[in-house]
Image (tube, rainbow, N blue to C red; front, side, top):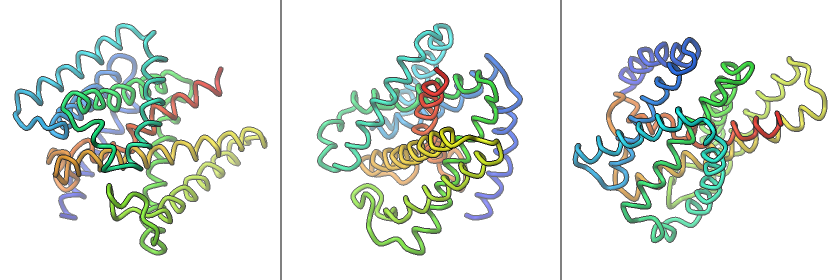
Length: 268
């Protein structure tokens, strides 16, 4: 398993980095769109559609909506705004699971939720890419999420006692969340010091980082909730040793649109 994980990571890493940092404009949007469409194919399974024609149809529908969003960039504020509302609601659904599943257990709500997860993630990345220092900002949100994951893993193993959401993901603890948050805040503070942020900028940066980290945890738990409801361990087996695309980007699907909105707010 470890060998598979390493081989897959070594193959995917240069492809991902090349797509993120070398592609521009429509090519970048297409690259991200392919990843998101694959996520749509996996999400259809979480929604209860095991037959390939139905899963492919949902992936095609996701791709078509992405294309329409690309043609009409004016919808970006609405898409990102919908994401903020969704992730606020998702926090409540996760904390109240399994009781909350009564509200979304049908196929139609699950398919709609898939759109609320996938489409804003694409929109957020496209928006961030267009900003000054866009590549570095994309790397920033990824480092925040990765830092949170690493900090949560080690602090959870060392100190984890209080379960975060035992009905959704029994292995996660509040101590892990705090450890992940602490590491991400340290990373943010170091970046701020290197870039010469003033006191106000540092406060805003740390607050924004905390919001992004917390919402990334919700993204992770949300996919876990739907997988638990569907009775499956991984979203697919597309990535040997890693599960599926959604298993690797679940935290980012939440963090990216919220990060984009925060950037939008601070720039305006």
